[in-house]
Amino acid sequence: MHPLLLAAMPFGETLGLGAVAGFTIFLGLPLGRVRALQGRPRVVLAMLAVGILLYIFLDVGSHGVEILEGELEAFKHHKEAFGTVVAYYLLLVGGFFVGSVGITTVEQRLKARSQPAVAGGAVPAAQAATAEIGHHDNPTTTRLRLAMTVAAAIGLHNFAEGLAIGVSAATGAVALATVLVIGFALHNSTEGFAIVGPLGEVRPSRRWLALAGLIGGGPTFLGTLVGYEVSSRPLELLFYALAAGALAYVIGEIWGGMRRFGYRQAALIALSVGFLIGVLTDLVVTYGGA
Image 1 (cartoon, rainbow, N blue to C red):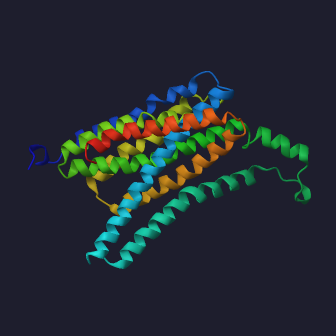
Image 2 (image 1 turned 60 degrees about the vertical axis):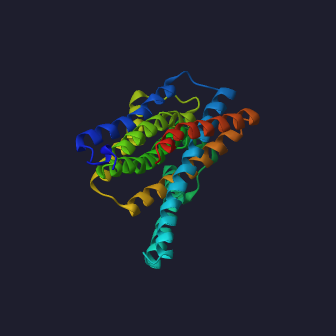
């Protein structure tokens, strides 16, 4: 046995590495404070973020399917009951729909509550327009909400990554845990950029950026803590499914919002570059054998 696999990594050191892996998300967030972008630069920034998110979506989805396939393989060799395979599949489906359709449902209800009510239930057109500009559906609020949804989706993904770090460290795979931290830290450094991409001309406050970084990167630390103490495949699958669903929603929203600005060729090039950036940063993890 390799000497690095003889003992588990100390708990405190493991948490420190998990914190480092999550903190790098803050590296890309300051871009949100840069002077407001318009036209082509705005589209390129947003679609670059979509490319990164698209890769994360595929990465998250593949991990979830791998867990399900592992249960199916166990059933095939008579090591697992068929009911367990079905339960895992339903967990995957349920998590995905909660992450995608659930967000849409909540958003629609928030919009409905924000509409002003008048006698008879009718809302004059001028009043409705004013409410749309001045209340929950104004462009600034919409973009900030969408960007924070990106942060939440990434946070779900990073919690699952943290689980992998914690489990590896607890089982004595110190070398693997270290490589995972390096790979995830590099990968997470691009996620801050993905969070601020949908903001466009909106310039968020430093407090908003700090909260977005905490929501997106903090779960890496929490996942490391949970993974060190508990090894749970259903929990891991659930967070992958939730993250995939939320990412699907976010990608669709950003894509739809950017189409009206044109610059189709520049948008597709930016999307491709963003996707390849995601592939490149993930190669470190693959090289480590994760």
